[in-house]
Image (tube, rainbow, N blue to C red; front, side, top):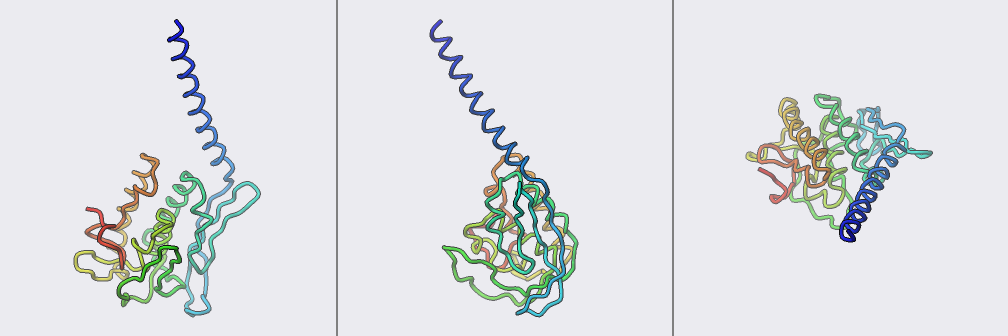
Length: 214
């Protein structure tokens, strides 16, 4: 009898903890009033390009987290819950096929404690909004060590190492990898490990061999 009561108490304790965690997750997500990804016109003072940039905006309680219109500062975005990140990534993936020119020239857009020197420099100088969207996803799912996964906003054919930013059909095909990664991440609730977006078919310029999945 005493053993039965002990087991019951343990069971109820576990249920209580799980319910508490679930309610906490629901409350965090409930605080988010609005999530948007907008394509805005921009002209960077250094690059001197009239183009566009994707801007992520998250209204959470009394605060609004917003990414800049001409750079990749996503520090506040990566602090948000995975559920919010899933929603942001889903919206970014809707820019598949958007060939509007980005207002930034190709560059190494990363600053991190373990920053490494990327080998080589791509010939490609420009990229479009559908690539901007994927590059932002990279930074959301791998906020640390991103230089090991994607040094530049330039996509390559991994086998031939040919730069394919101008091949809209291939970039659209590459989106399938990200869409699958998102499905897996939602199923496993593990965002970082689920996004193995560098493949033996497509990858990012400067990616290390060990980041490439089959």
